[in-house]
Length: 83
Image 1: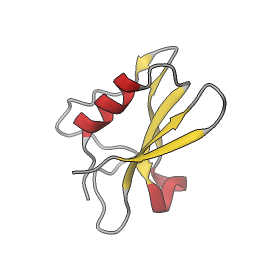
Image 2: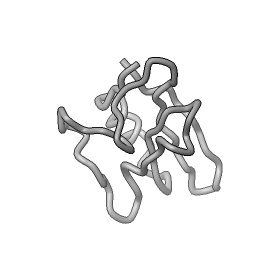
Image 3: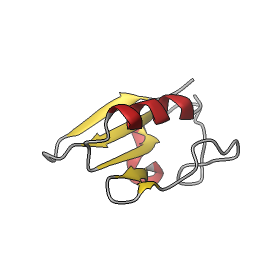
Image 4: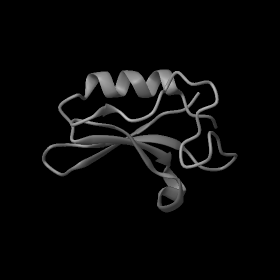
């Protein structure tokens, strides 16, 4: 499965009250997660870059690409984010 960066942008636009939003592969977050947006700096990566890789990867044959929303209350919300 490959990241859907358009969906990621929509998730970010819909959650601008979050502390930060990361992308990663759900079954291997320890190695694959990267913050792509935070409330202080905004976008930290160009989600329109066709060669973008998150933590060095852009797809997986076995893991699920997800967006992780860290809310201002400290709760994490995980949303599948793949094509």
